[in-house]
Image (cartoon, rainbow, N blue to C red):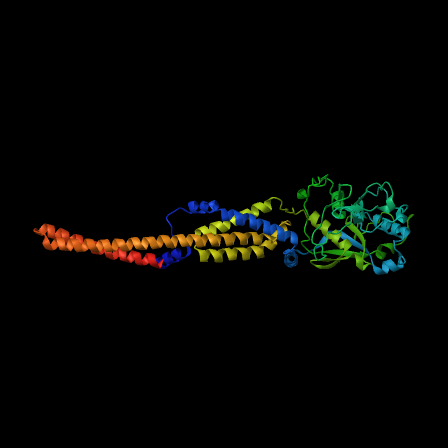
Length: 461
């Protein structure tokens, strides 16, 4: 067993006299290492910009999100969704677009009278007909209105924010607004919730869900002015599927009428009282969006984003850390090729890359700036190390051949010494001298045999 372990050790690891660290640091003196390092880094960046790995990243992330959601799926206890259903759109709003302002006012007052924790209105009110719409003023809880936006013709990376409530100069007390803009991926699916958007005024405008979060959690330290540096922003990932209790608008309009707006005032309604209510519409297919969990209406996207924010799990974001991550992986590959012989090192690094591609999805899931395009960079390091390993193997083979030749010469010299000692023993005039010469001959023969065996082992290695 001991001999097998020793043999396995000789097969897997380099058997050299120098220390590991000396050999490890010697790799970085090779200019080709730095050439491949910079070249691999550049190739990874270019491939990432071209979106070569984007499609695979997205769908592997979707599979992971669905698998994670099965373990962490839940029904929200804090958020409720009230929808203008197709039936509501036909009977209440008479199929009219933009929505009839008096009827929309009636719907908003009906929901506000039930004292929710917050009311998020995910409906477009940019048309001028909404300028004089009667809305609750200082209702005792925040009301957040959706503000639509369009890409700027002069700067596609910036948005032109549309007006809210018909462009009235001042919003009612306890009312605010947020951009209702969905961040679509390469395949037109929603996988992230931006908290801020850059507008043409070179400022950051809050998204609808983040405006709602800050309205309900004003003491949160993250709710403040941010600079234009993208790297400081946290962008949550659509990481789980949450079920929400949904209600049709007519369920609340059908209550007995009291008060100036045709609804009862101060109603305690266990369905939405004390809950965050997202008021949206499901009457149009234009408000349906692809997600990792299937098609979802816009109001549910806002609710999912807000629920995830309220959950309080910190969101990771790789800034400069991603460069340190790549460098550490490169150093690990160099260490593997320094310690192991070429073939075991190749299998070890291929296994490492396979593990990285699979587990890298988890990293991309929790650190949204990570992408699998790091793999070409690591492949460049592996290729360089294979070349260095071949060079080291060539040097070791030359060294072994030299040792083999030296041992063979030593064996021949010992044979000559043996012959000389034997001849001296035959001609010695005294018995003591003859015995000494004979012992020398025996020792020389033994050394010759040992040298021959050593030369044979050196040749096999």
